[in-house]
Figure 1 (cartoon, rainbow, N blue to C red):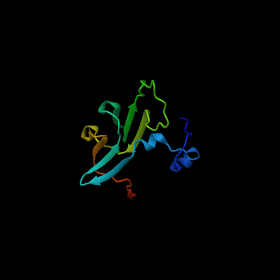
Figure 2: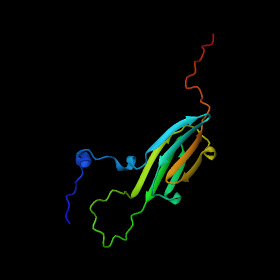
Figure 3: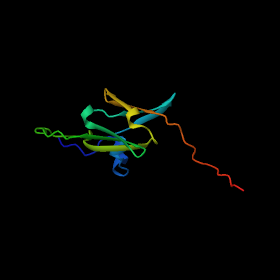
Figure 4: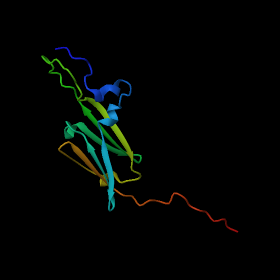
Length: 130
């Protein structure tokens, strides 16, 4: 069976406007509640060991890595959409104590809890002395 490369209408524009697979594979919701921020990110098909979370210089970095399965013998793919490789997203979170950031991973969803930081005034008016 020799099918054309693309045979679904919704894929028509994919050749002209390829989407950023890296960003697309790590979609998330960000919300706040009480004194915390929450990031909920879909990372289906990954294990806890495939995810690395780092906080430094005011940025939270989430990296994932999924290795390609090499037991492909006897498979004649018509379509292959599942992605493998490395993905990375960063979020500015400010001066948060890294020990206060919590993360949990269940059923392909990564949930990160970040405490809100008391904001320091970004503007300070200095009075001129006589």
